Image (tube, rainbow, N blue to C red; front, side, top):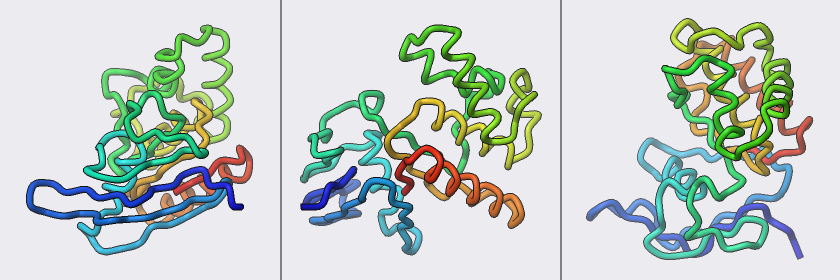
Length: 190
C-alpha cells in the first residue's frame, strides 16, 4: 500500500454558481516534486488553498499523512504555501518576516535566531536580516518567502506560481532553490 503525504478524496468546491472542482481526487507521495498544470481558472490555486486550509471544500475529505485535516485551521497544518505575490509583511524587516511563524509557535529566541540564520544562508540572503521588504528586488522577496516557509520545517510546501512575477534568470534561480530544498530537507513540493 502506498503512503501519501496529501490525499484529496471526492473534493467539490464552488464559488456561487461557478463549480471549480467536482468530485476531484488527488494524491501526492512523500518527497515528490509535482507540478499542476492547466489554464487560468481551472482550479489550481483553489486546490492549494483547500489543502493549505485557506478555503473549505463543499464536499470531500483532505488527508495529510493519513490524518483527516479537512476541518483544521491553516495554522494547525504542517503545510506552507509560497505565493506568487510573496505575501510578505511590508512593516517587518527580512528577519521578522522569516521568524513570524516561529514566533507564533512561541519558540525560544535563540532557536528562532539560529533557524533564521540557517535559512538565510540557504537562500543566499545572509546580511539581509535588517533590510526592509520594499528595498528588495522581486527575486529577493521571493527568496524571503521561501525562507519563511523553510524555517517552519513543514512536511510539504505548496508553491502557487512562485516565479510568475520574475524574469527568466531569477525564475531559474528560484526553481533551482526549490528543487534543492526538496532534496536537502526531504520535503514535498507541489
